[in-house]
Amino acid sequence: MTSEQPQNLQVERAPRESLFILTLFTTPGGDYLGKARVRNLSATGLMADCEAALTKGQKVQMDLRGVGRVEGEIVWSREGRVGVSFDGEIDPMLVRRPVNASKSSMPDYLRLHAKQFGSG
Image (cartoon, rainbow, N blue to C red; front, side, top):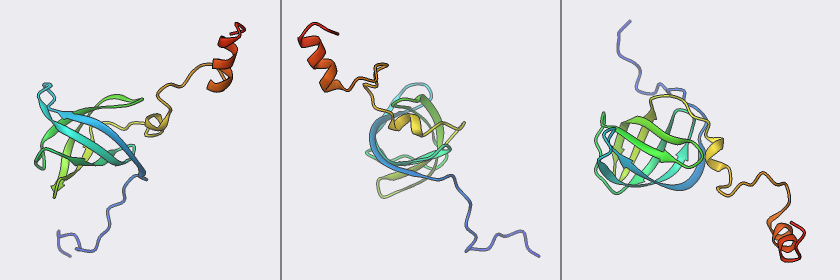
């Protein structure tokens, strides 16, 4: 038996959510690396289109809507796309939460109507 893994071995990965959100990649020190458009996201990583030429092994951080600052490492880079493995797991469903989520269960159109007539 050899220590080499078979070429067709599939590495199990976390389920991915397809989405499009914008973020900025920076170094852990805060230096700007470039804009990125996240195309899919999981608890352990993401794939994004990136304007910067990033290299495998490079440490990056980004802010993800609903999650906050996330740090990780570039695990692959090719043709303007990168794969990032996060340093810790996140809840990817938080990114899907509406930005203007309100504590009120009243729909926006009713809340605006209620304000217009002085009952809210």
